[in-house]
Structure formats: C-alpha cells, structure tokens
Image 1 (cartoon, rainbow, N blue to C red):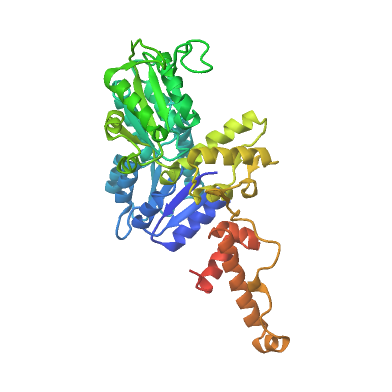
Image 2: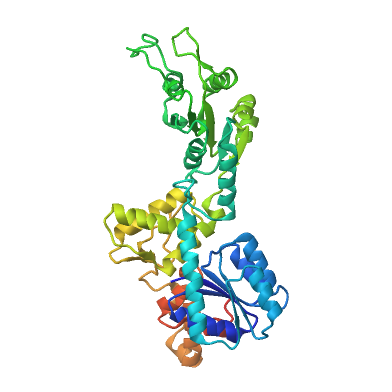
Length: 461
C-alpha cells in the first residue's frame, strides 16, 4: 500500500485515478490544481505524485519544480492529453519519474505507479534512519537541517545548547555531535540535572574527598572528572541551582574543577553540550538563570523541532518502532492500517517522539492481528486521556432521540424524518472520526463514494 497524491483540474480524471488506485490498495488524496496540491504536500508525505501538466494557475511543470526543491526523492509522474516533445523533455529534465499521455492504458499506468512507489519505499528505508546518525529518524526539511548542523558543529570544540520540548530526542542529537567530534573515542557522560538531589549535585559533578561530609567514606572523582577529554551532556540545564550555575561557569571559564572538601584544583578538558525544554531567556529575565553562563553554553544554539512540526516523518518513525517492538515483543506486526496512520497524522503528540514510541509499543502489545488497527491506539492530550476518534458510544446520542410526538412524526412524513436523521448521523460520525471520510464511510457501512455524494447533497461543511 502506498500513499499517492493525484493532481488534475478535470474531476473525472481525478475520480478515475482515485478509484483505480484505491482498488489496488493505495491511499489516495486528490487536488484540483497545483496550488492546492502544494498546500497538501506541506502536511503529508506521499509515495508518489501524479499530476497533469496543463492546469490553470500553477502548471504541472511548476509543481514538479517545487516538489523536487523540497522533496528531491519523491517520484512525480506527469500525465497530459496534449503530447508535446518539449513538455516531455522539460518534465524529464526537471526530474519527473515518467511522462504518460492520455488516454493511457490502465495496465501501463499501474505498472509505472508500482515502479514509482517501490522506488519511494526503498529511498525511505535507506534515508529514514540516517546511517550517519543512528537512532535519529527523519527526512523532513527540519531534520535535514539538524543533520547538516551536526556535521558542521561536531568537529569543533564549541559548546552547544540544544533547545526542544520533552521527548524530541535532544540526547540523541547530543550523542551524534559527540560521535562525529574529534573526541569520539573519549567518554560521553549524560547527566540529567533534575534527577540529582540538590544537596548531592556538587559532589556528583565535581567529586568529593574522604571526610568532606557525613557519609563521604572515600574519595569520589565526580562525573566531570570521568568525562575528562570527552563530552558532558547536561540535560535540563535550567534546573540547576544558582550555586551550581556559578561553579559550572568557573569550569567553562577556567577549565578546572575542585572536589567538595578538597584543596587541589584539577585542570580538565571537556566539551559541554547542554539541553533545555525551557526558554532560558525568560529564566534570565526572572533572575533564575545566569546570563553569563547562558552565553558560555549557547556558543552554538540548536533547536530540535517538535513532532507536530515535522508530521511527514511520522510514517518513518511508525515503521521503525513497529519493527523494533515486533521484534522485542515477539509479534508479527507487519504494518499499520491507513486509518490508524491517519489518526496519528491528525494528532499533535504533546509528548513528541517519545510519546509516539509508547503509542506504538502499546499498539503492538495489544494487537492480535498482523496489522495495527485504530482501536489498538491509545492517544493522550497532555495528562488527560484523549478519546479514541474512532470510538462511537454504544448509547445513542441525544440527536437521534425522538423530539416529536407520534402525531407530529406522521405529519412530517417518513421522507423528511429519514433525511433529517441521515444528515445528523453523518455529521455525528464525521465528528467522531475527526472528519475522516474514509473511516466515517466504514462506520456507516456505505462506500466512500456514497458518503461523498451525501455530504455534497446535504451541504455538510
């Protein structure tokens, strides 16, 4: 199964290709012109795009150029009723996967699309998980920028401050920077600042000597000492107390540490990579974070985007986690249904990649078939469990309960009653499925085409 975008200003051609491709098991979205297609491409990832060449507004060639600029590996198949050698040459020169003239042979178009989507799958598998940065998955523009930044800053000794919400993968980015640095063979020590009690923080970071305090029965070198020559990753740096901030500033300025209770100062060579999910500028304004420390840490600032800003990477991440947890949980889960994937694509993931991983792990554990279905997904919004958008209550909602006496019902007539009920039922089902027409049609036990007709008939927006 592949996700395919069909772009044509002729509705009959759009409908024909949609029916043809959905019969082959593909997930198809249509657009009536190049501008509409370009808007769709901002929020969806496709295995292939099929576009007419001659369309009003943005032509197919112009759409091709934009697609290749943003998604170089996305196969684009050009179709036209006006065969022109010049168009063909221009299309292929701009990176079109193939060029087909109307009317075309059904088997021919199916063969070309299969070749295009197969190529797209191979490219995604090869590029989805970067060979250079194990564990960091993505091919969106945002992640390609992250990969480029890692390559550029890793060889330098500059300190790095990584911004990002919880669950975005800041530690993976820090690890990648260390692994591509000139000290990759030296230690990488991750420290979660909020996980160490305040009264033990100084000792944990800088060490202590025997007898420095009650319970100090022997010398302890400290984590900074263990990282000497390598990299220290300070996660949740905004949680450090003012006293520790001052001592950390001295480490950055003088490159030296002194253990608690000790008198001897030791010179160390370490690189600091810090991370935070707070806005440190606001912490500085509130007097909770030292401005001079901020500038020492943020020699190179790097922002890791939340998952909601790179939705195109969701299918890649889903595929990765499906394989991971199918193996770990000894399951034979092959894929995720298009309806389940649509649920995830419409979800904002407040917990980011970490939340998606947990969702997939639970889904694999709960699923009894070899494909993840919507009912196996459990989504949350913040700390509050989110209602499964495909779960319809067993109890009939108030809108289906009789609001008229028996006499009034007879006066209205069966046609009016059934029409009104049908419209309300469609509205109710679309609401329950987060406006997914495909899933709504399935719940209503009618064809997608019939549902689309009824939506138009009742002027449902």
